[in-house]
Length: 111
Image (cartoon, one colour):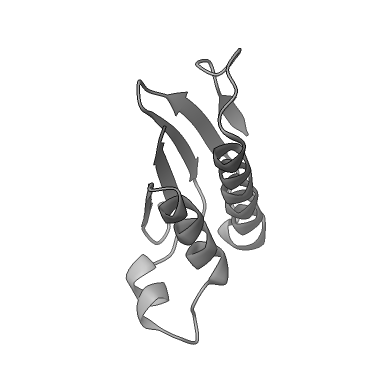
């Protein structure tokens, strides 16, 4: 795992934002462990002028996000929860994945 947080050394975010980002990262790493069969994961937290962005990417087996969304049987509550946590704070949740090419999750929350 590579972790990049170089813009966060001496700042604190609002507690609700910190908690949401922590829980989203926790679920994302849990998904990597359970499903991805990845050998490498990178995580970055970057603060812009008016937003905070969390990106987590792996080199695992990937999946088809459209299939997960369209199939009730395959519905992933973890993905739903991550999306809802980011949207509850006015943020955006994006996931990109392709079979055999890994997965990238990006969350951006306004500050």
